[in-house]
Image (cartoon, rainbow, N blue to C red; front, side):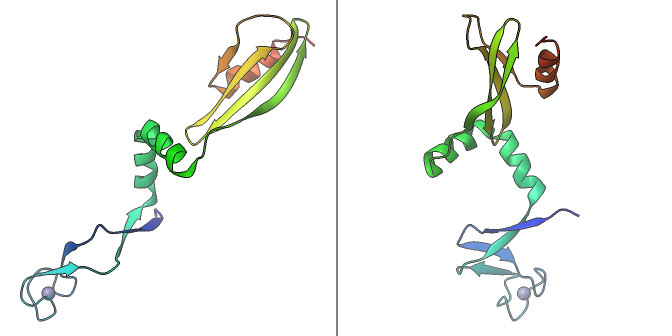
Length: 129
Ligand SMILES: [Zn+2]
């Protein structure tokens, strides 16, 4: 049982007459169809909306930034003190998921990028404090 979300229909629209199911009746003036000109809403399965977002993520992300001025949230997730240095784990959160950038705050070395939380956890586990 999937949840439905009511979204505005594109108007004007012509729908099959819901009274006679297209078989022509008095309500649809013997046409089998009804033209919608007033505000109407159509039910869309939530799963279809999520699927559309996932399949169009880069376009939708750009539109979210442009229209709502939203950007991914960026913040320090934690500080990991190791024998090789003190690392900051920066988490980048967006509608498309999260990723982490780990960088050594004391030594000059290339940052590490993680898109897999288990791999990040494994890296942390391999650090002796
Ligand atoms: Zn009808």
